[in-house]
Length: 342
Image 1: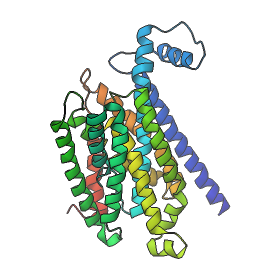
Image 2: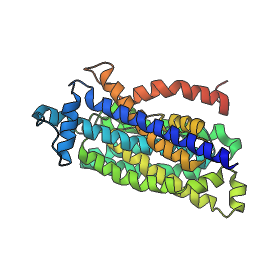
Image 3: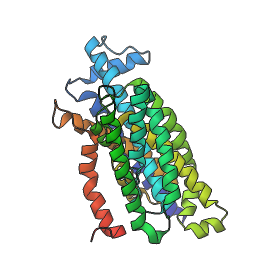
């Protein structure tokens, strides 16, 4: 048993190292590739000088602007979003014991988009994250109140979330078209996402909420493992299931809301990544959440790289890329696990 456990730990460590290598490779490619092509000396020179080192000749003003003012905050925001969305998806799937639970499908993402649009309309872009966090929390509370969590109610659970998301998506459109459209980003930004407007200030505002929410989510990994045994068993073992679900839903609402307020809704990250990690690392939530925190950013940053290079110089929404990748997976999962597709 000890030998088998040691092999499992080594295998998990090797997989996590592999995920990390993928993340680093995607980050490097995102720094180098784009409308303006940069060499390794340009990127490394700018980054080194920002931490107080001198590496080679002084970078050009153009290279410094592209690396530090455009690509670095964009990549940073992609990392923040990847951690938030992937870990939130894993938490929702664990809380509701439903393989199709996802922040977008359950309406939390569209709900946050309503607040982001209203916050921008009423107070400018600096209020987008705060507004999205607020309505993300409200949506999470509404969802927690309305949704049955029993395994026998899986189809109803997903349908209620989809209905809530559709209604809230319509309100995003109302908020945009009813306001000053010169001040509010277009509907496609809120519903399909984009990292093109990322700045250090936006990333900083989102990071504060994501760090707090993710700490709650990751800190609940042991209880998520217990909850996987079933609600009755978890209650028997001393878990206050109702309170735990409420706390996790609020953490997800705050985390997803912060991301949506910064970059709009990026679909299916919370559905796809936890399943990939679960297949490779197993169902225990400690290692699952760690894997999601590594592979999620790799997926989002990679999708953003594809969004801005596939049809260059035209940039497409990141949500189109993630939907194109994860959509077929969603259909397969719906047919296999829930029976929604027949």
